[in-house]
Length: 267
Image (tube, rainbow, N blue to C red; front, side, top):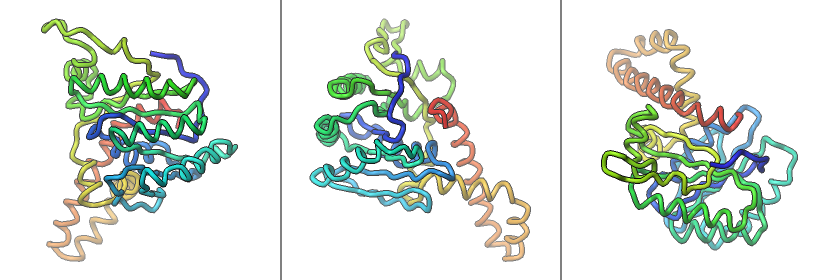
């Protein structure tokens, strides 16, 4: 693990040469929530030839673009990186496989340096090799990266249990499985709980976690007012809204579990 160095705080890149590891959840759900404040302007660029963002938000600017269109977007991000305005934040969500390689290559061609990188990983054994490849690509052009590992779908948030689940990364003496964490050069490691909330927000409700959190916080903080209003609308409406209220509490619990990431990023 490396020591933290001064980085470009405006630019955040979510990447992994492996697809299906949670890059979109990290880039479109988690990071906008963590990096947002009342002063910030957060833009999320999903650069992927296969997917289109279908998430709505009143607080985040989303844009899906094809690989062939990425050069102009990356130039805009590069322009913003020179800004003294720390409140203009760009998140680049790379697609998997060749898409990630193409975007990292474009960043290299633009001489972008000192960026923040987030590499999501599940507990599959072969994904450690993908992480090693991704880090190698990053370090081939960025001499001062801040690399964050995101351990996705953690069954428990207890560190001992996480190490057991991610034995592919931390090893397991009981089955003579060696640790490979020492083979990876990174700055921080974070844990994301296994929950269906991300999927429900992304595909069913089609709303950003940030917006859901803001709504949930208001709903729970002013529950008495809302409960009285719902009661006046009849039993059926009250019952339906109570289901929404319980989901709101789950969203708040999830956001609380993500706080270590927010504290580490200094926001």
